Image (tube, rainbow, N blue to C red; front, side, top):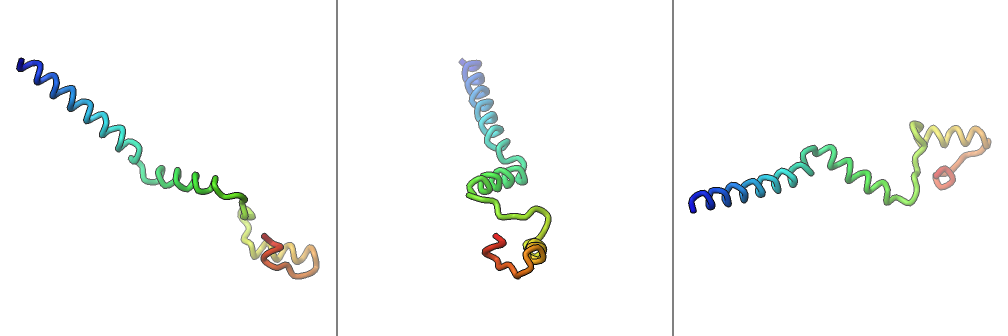
Length: 77
């Protein structure tokens, strides 16, 4: 009877430890969790309104030089 109780306690503890390990493994790296959150948010955006490494002001200036007239923010977007 004593061996049965020890076995049950040991197996229950192993299951509990495994559950804890799986739970905390998901959140082991906070940067990775933040990355997953940001990636999901970026995919929800209907369009990407960036110009790469150039700032919007640089793009606005370049477009204004090409057209020969000033460009407002709506046209730039």
